[in-house]
Length: 95
Image 1 (tube, rainbow, N blue to C red):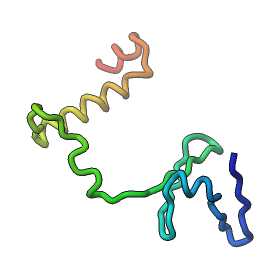
Image 2 (image 1 turned 90 degrees about the horizontal axis):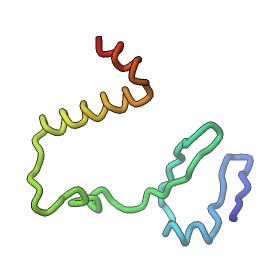
Image 3 (image 1 turned 90 degrees about the vertical axis):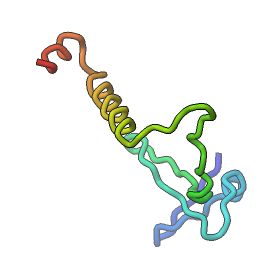
Image 4 (image 1 turned 45 degrees about the vertical axis):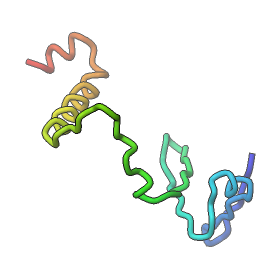
């Protein structure tokens, strides 16, 4: 496990083994993502937006319209909002 010590200015040096693994170079960006109380994950922001081109393309599947996408998002949001409710609660929420 690699460790680093923060300076009085709040700076740390990313250990070499981690820099190598994440392919970090001078100027690389890092994101600090909260994953729980007192738990933060450091994520390398390597790559460019153009690298994402085509990642959702599925050969043979037609493109969805904006309206279809919005409907799918709304359905998923409604479903996830009901996920924590038991059957009695969800019935009363629908009335």
